[in-house]
Image 1 (cartoon, rainbow, N blue to C red):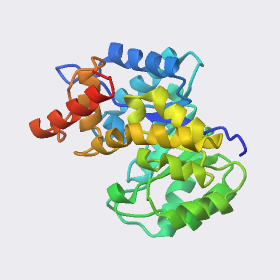
Image 2: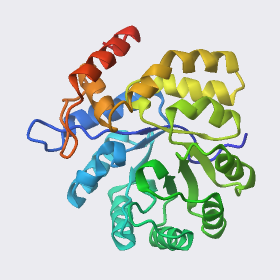
Image 3: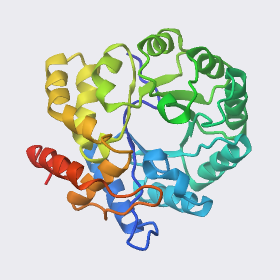
Length: 296
């Protein structure tokens, strides 16, 4: 398997807030150090797991700058910079690059339901506006539209800085088409922790993970085990963390993972509306799983 620039275990980083709902910069710096120590390959602030729809432009810039400073070149810093207005998405991408992002994660334009040509034009404008690599984020369950494999392949072939796709469609046929027909520089990453084992076994390059917020070294070990063909080890790791992968989506992401991180003593359990705390019933279930894994 060839080594591509954007591959391995990437964390879709949460944004820690203080009780007044301002960004908790101290906690953010601690999270970066946690991931450096765990061997996470790529750290991605300001994505949807980072509650990006609730962040101002100034906050986005400051968060990326803080993560970049704390990383000190020890981990690749990509950054979420997507929205459903192409003009605004271009601005966000440019600001993220100025803040120090080494790559841009740009979600497919949601709600608008553009045609495949509209999606192509959206990403074309973004790719031409920045010099850093662009990661296409395809998550139909959230956006209401699917970025077809043919559109992703067209973009990757025409723009050298479209170097990865975060593919969260769970469409095996589409995933295989991407893996088998991609240009050499295109990384194909899963956006689903529960898909890590089969996805990489099919030839995928890694994961952009929610669970890596809680168990970064274990997610990295799972990725590496599959890549090396150590399937018994991979199956054991997958079985151990399967319930956690599922529980992280028992309510809208990132509510469960932020609750877990708060229980682990890493951040405060603070969200920005319209997200609210997890139900008491689901907190009990999450607590039991965290305890069984030795995380609390």
